[in-house]
Image (cartoon, rainbow, N blue to C red; front, side, top):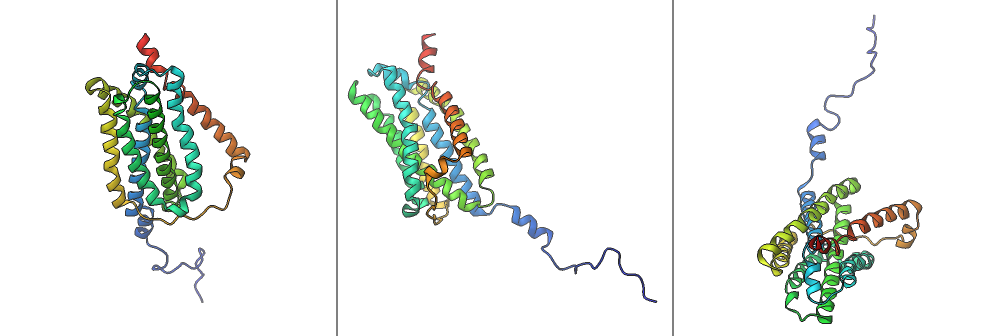
Length: 265
């Protein structure tokens, strides 16, 4: 008499299927992905430090050079405006320029103009000083827009299945830059004067350039098929854009005014 069959049904052979070690290995970051994360973190941290380092002392210095509060606010605001406009242009031509070249070139130019911002106290006061502030600040915004746009493209290529998680995690470095920029800038200004904060930070950004040239992989960027304007009019996208704009306006409003108010008190 035959023995009854196995109630659990036939079992697969022991050797079939990926072993546990292989599954664990697939979850680990590759060396290339780690390098991409380092590069993206460096640009997020550097860009936000360059943006926020002005807050504690630049309004006072600009007032000494004859700039009104309105003009000081425009100097701060032009950074975000040209960052927005340049991002649209760079996003369109990213596939033609190349993501790695755009990333490295943007970081190099930004480091250079950050150093230049440190010598603006030698410029004659009045319209010349104001014009140079706008020129340097706009160039800084455009260069970082290039680097950030390229960074997003590279992250999407390196982490196609975890884009949202990776980009959200890297935003912590943007926050860290906003946290470190003002106290570091204020300390260096108080200890060494106007030039040192910009020269030190600019040199740090420039030192990141050869590092990123060596470790950043070279990804091919695919041209987009969808229009930006069709994307932005989607209700969910428009709502999220409105929230981001409102929050950014909240802390951006304080940049040109808070330090002057505190000094008066």
